[in-house]
Length: 403
Image 1 (cartoon, helix red, strand yellow):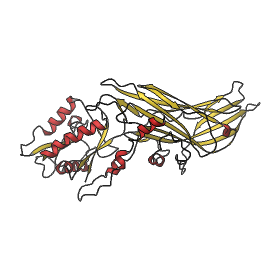
Image 2 (tube, helix red, strand yellow):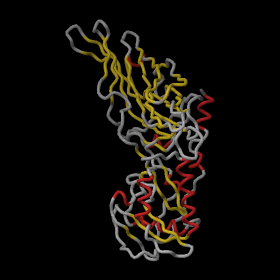
Image 3 (cartoon, rainbow, N blue to C red):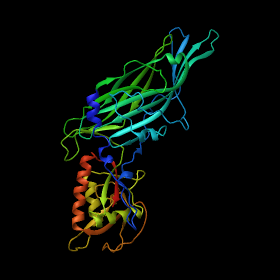
Image 4 (cartoon, one colour):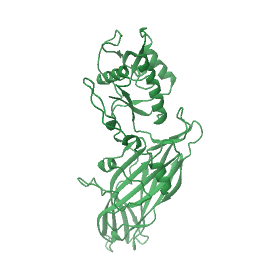
């Protein structure tokens, strides 16, 4: 598994590692590439574990073992996963730790969530009352990482008890991985590991293959870790950690490889003022007027339906003036679901050669006559971006203007 993890993880973060902050150009609000690659919160989905107390009683009814969701640990920073981490496991990124207890966060090739978890051992007295005989509080990290050009990805779980007492500290943790929908487990390992010493990580690592490998296939996957607490004198208790962030496909135009991504992360495509000034300038002004696409909160969504993209372009630029070395650019892009087929009207700006109003608001499109080389370059930029980021129909994405 170590070789698999190394192969998968070698490409994670490679692009962002070379990014540099971009200077700000006067008059245009630019985004840095570093900012563009920051993690974003994911949508609500299956919880990391079963909410509320989840107790298993012994057959004689005299004892019980309970997993229980815990409230957010205000001010508690998880112990660094670098401590006592197995060499087989991938390094947990710092941004995951920084967003502890805030829900799932991710990039296009990674998703991570830090949660709290409690375990108690209990004895039922002869009068029916319950006596707690031990407890530990733990941090749990669920981390997934993918490769955009491989059919394999990983779901890694790490559990560290940071406080505890009594019989609960006699626990041995063991995990079993499973998969549902369009995927299968390749291999997995979470051998029995004692919960002590405290503040050290108990790690499980599982690798999955997509079954969406035929041309045109697109498949989602749910990966699950079932973690069992074995405690001498108490019944075994199982808690479940489900993840649903990965989608794989063999349906990305121009990409001959099967690959997997975090489907809900809106990857950024960059338009450069230095390389394509008229294109970038138009998009910056369009976004400044209120049109979507620059933020996580209001991304664009791709459409591959020609019944949408064709009318989007025609409605925006069908009456464009004929100007030598100029072509009509529309924003939001015709290949997005936010084009004119979604409603709204056209707007423009000074120097764009359209006799249209200058207005603000989140609906409609902006049109502008830009330099022909810039307009031609845009097609290549978007094709490469859609191909590399595996942006399929309905996927969110962002358009960011940089220096």
